[in-house]
Structure formats: structure tokens, C-alpha cells
Length: 312
Image 1 (cartoon, helix red, strand yellow):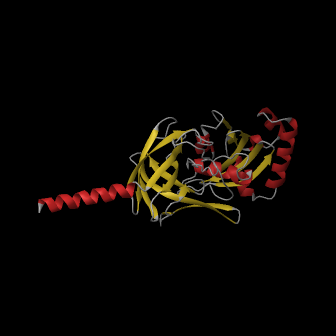
Image 2: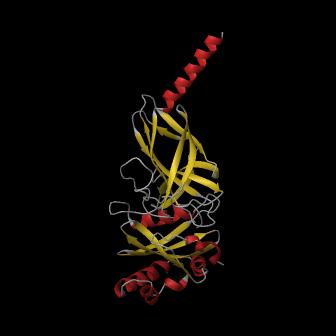
Image 3: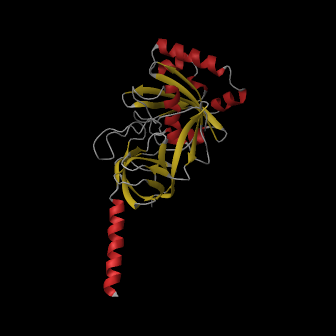
């Protein structure tokens, strides 16, 4: 009887190991988070080397109260983010990239992710079982091509999402944590960048309007009854936040002081005025409620958490 039990246990172990061997994880990476943020993101590439389809059905991490799989989609110009409750199919012999439409959200994070550290998580697959993954934490915004291991290039920014982290702002109109030349248009990439960094399920973020002039843009945001405007600049990493303000960046003179050329400042201010003329006065009041100007640290805008607490 002992021999039979031993053989049975050995068979179970071998079967579990074989199942796990069918799932390969590459490029697991997260964006660093602003101080006080409670939601982090996770991107990765999943390859099913087996002959049967599998499904990612859950995840957990000691660094978060819960980890969910989310899907971001565009519907009539409005970007929505929802938990993918049924899991994500991983077809046999195929690779699924979790960016930008699919990504993990680490919620109720105990300590904001810091660049350079690794975040361990356990992914649960329908057939392969549990697979432990270490997410390398990169910059606060922008592509994560240079982190996450396993060679190759992966632009975790095309939404954000990349991670959105999903920390603090509201909903219509978005895409990409940042964007390269071949990525989505700025009207999608910029909102997604902000949404990935600052949105939470409890506090959806609305980005509207987005006005672009060459490598500069202004995006209006609303969240939890507050609002403001963000000035962004495009560089080789994608779109990054330069500063956050209220009415302080509506005028061309203020934009010139922020670094725009006289021509770009004039065009951007004029276009912003034209677009905002059609907005509800209550929305404009929220934009104006942001007090002062908050400069973002570093090229990726580390510190956009200034949205939180500056709105009235």
C-alpha cells in the first residue's frame, strides 16, 4: 500500500511539474508608483508551449490586498477599464502579451513600488496551476523595454497602461502609458498614460479634452469631484507629465515659461480655448479648482500625485 501511495504522489508531482512547464513568463515588469498611491500595474508576456489551451484565472501578491486582471477598451471614444472576471485565455502554442489592453492591477498596495525592486506575485492558471513571477519595477511612466528580463522589446506604455499606476484622477477618452512613433495617436496615448498611472476602480479618471501641438499637449482631467490640467511633452520615451495646474496654463505666456516656443504656445493656447469653449461650465470650474502649479520630478513626471489634494 505504501508503494502504491508513493507512486501516486510521484505521479501527481510529475503531472503538476509538466503542467507548469507549459507556461513561460517573459518581460514581467511594473511601473514605479507615486508616494501614497495604492494601485500598481503589472505587464508580462505569457507563452503556452503546451498542446492544450490554458487560462489565467487569478493572481495574488503579498505586496497587495488583491491582484486583478483588467481589460481596457475603447467604446465610442470612451476608454473603460474592467476586471476580466472570466480569466484570460492562453491558446496552445501561442503567446499572449499583457499590454496595453490587458494588464494586472495590484490593489491596496501596502508600500508603493520603487524603481529597481522586484515584486513577487503568484499567477494561477486553470491547468498549469500556480506560477511564481517576479515583476521588475521600472520608471514611473514610459516604456519598460529595458526591464523585466528575457530579451526583446516590449512597450508596456501603449496604454499606460501602461499601469496606469492606476492611482488618482477620472474616465472618457484614452490609451497608452506612453507612446512611441509607431504607437497610438496622442489623443488616445495621453489619456491612457494618465489613466494607467492614477485611476482606481473606486475613483475613475476622466481625461477630456486632449489638445496637441507638435511635441506638447494639454489634457484636462476630472476625478472624484476635482480636476485640473496636465501639460505633457513627448520625448523618445513617449509622453511624460511636465506639470499639473489649473487655469495657470491656459495662456500662451505661461506656456512659454514652461518651455514651449512662442509659436507652439500660441497655437496650443488658442486650440485649448476653442475646444474648452464647448465644455460644460461645471467641468471648467473643476479644471480651475486645481490650486497653483505642481512641477513633476524627472522626465517621466514622477510626482503627479500632486493631483491629490490640490483640487478644492
